[in-house]
Length: 427
Ligand SMILES: Cc1cc2nc3c(=O)[nH]c(=O)nc-3n(C[C@H](O)[C@H](O)[C@H](O)COP(=O)(O)OP(=O)(O)OC[C@H]3O[C@@H](n4cnc5c(N)ncnc54)[C@H](O)[C@@H]3O)c2cc1C
Image (cartoon, protein in one colour):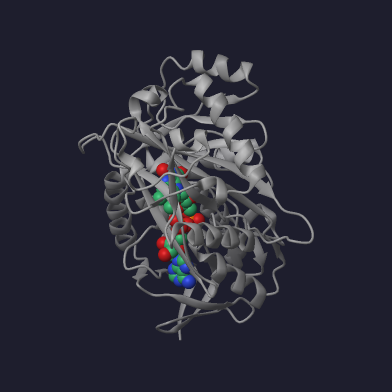
């Protein structure tokens, strides 16, 4: 069995952040990175907006502002992004404040999906240059921290320390690893919401602030705004209970032709308590309900229909008030009010009305709401060494799947924090 000083499962930003920090500190380290996908780098492929300001992306259970800012400085030094300018947003910030909302001022960079791909290519080549073994299309099956053995669908390898960073889609795998290694965890938080798609001219704030982060009462927030060449996409979730889709959004870089549309998510955070404590199980049930109503597809509804309390249909979807074609045209025109839990829908609608006062135009009849957009990343392990996300000796869990991040830069920072722990443990 081949031995590696460190094995990393998942080549998303958490895995890459750990790998580069380890190789920077100890150039001769024997490092294996494996990913079940045939290509590298998980979520860096999607739009690649990078936020460099506390608290965006940093769960406050795991991070304090000083620690996050220290790591963010390191992430920024490594990635050297071009920070976008924000202009003339005071007027929006003042309107938000009057409504009890908060427009966060954030340092951002945006590469776009194609720019993200170029970055990945560069990073992968650099890893190879530095002697790391990157194995794609290889799925991790189990991790035994006590024996220091990782089993994959191709081989077994032994390790001095392992990072499991399988992202949100690797949620079930991570739970298996935690159960097998006696790591207690809770999974009680979930974000439920809609993706809003509209003409860019009806959400002009995006010209001055690429991804405006606005926090509303009742734990609602805007999330992941895309514009210029923006598209709504769907992500597949599959487990023993079946298949369901969550929507998401991305944009191409400024090099591609603009399509005049913008999209963003409005999400409400739900923290479940006894007796139902699994956010993943709740997400799956909501996803299944949406698929039932949408005939196996996410549902989309024009605001014009939503306000009148009637469903959208394929025939009415292109009426004269509805002046753009959806980018995720495969969705089923329907009634999202039948699928979204009432408490969530009320909170989202209140926030959308406030947002329409902050940035007038949003509630034009043409605007489309897509459902479901659900984030199931909160899989909170109980860490023995919380400073470095070490669950048990030799086993580290980080990134969106482990709930230590909610975005690219915080995932990268989580990986760096793990690397610091590994360097001390392996010394
Ligand atoms: C469509 C979309 C758009 C997004 N846009 C942005 C954005 O603009 N800005 C932002 O900050 N965040 C964005 N995000 C979120 C961001 O992608 C994540 O926060 C981030 O990628 C999390 O990093 P991670 O390393 O934890 O996991 P991931 O990036 O998800 O990487 C996990 C990797 O682990 C691999 N894996 C899983 N299970 C196994 C296994 N058993 N064996 C081997 N490999 C495995 C997966 O194939 C994957 O490559 C977006 C997400 C999506 C889906």
